[in-house]
Length: 335
Image (cartoon, rainbow, N blue to C red; front, side, top):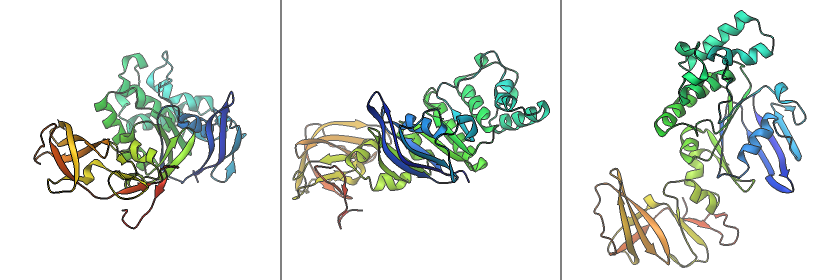
């Protein structure tokens, strides 16, 4: 079993809480993404799982084994870093083989396992090159192959795609999903990029200021955000949040995603268009309604309102949040 269980994990640095009482169950074979802005504690939490950081309090279990005080090399965890961390003087093959060499695996077995890992990531023709002779995407695949060759129970990945360009990130995302399915291992992946989280995760844990905001599948988190923070962090453009009384007679915050607002000149809710972004595949209408800015997403073939004109808006799929705690309030009208 390669499940990971965190119980009441806290980690402080000089009295500042980087991780604040986090409990999380990562199932066997999960692709769990830890998602949040810079400084939210997601990388620190990953390092606690891998053993590179010792928690101030709390316990870490891998399978049913308590590993809080176990050295990183004995946790059966492989770490993939943002910076690749390759040995520049070694060939690709030597880099991939290195974890096996440290463990005393025979040369013949090392070579066979390195070749298998390299083939799975399309690196066979580069085995005799040095890292300096590779592109950024190829170097990241070498780092992945070096992790794969160990055949660990858990893969820990700390923003491994952030150094790649947009096209290569998209290609490597697909490779990672295929790799996860092929290896049937548990992946714990850190990112601040919601697109990576939405496209790769089987489940995601959204973090803010060292605490867990919400855990669920990407579809669940998008459809039923547990707080205003999650509602506005997931989705591009983010969910519109209207203050109490702005769009309905209630004392709660109302959230509506841009795709759930329609333009209808006969609607009683009035808005003033500030500017329009025509993006080809869609049109974003920025307007002022209820004293706040809002964004409306329209199909590319829909009529485009003129800037500074007045339009009517129809809101559907409303979400309600407590104005004090900003946590979700489920009502009969919510989805």
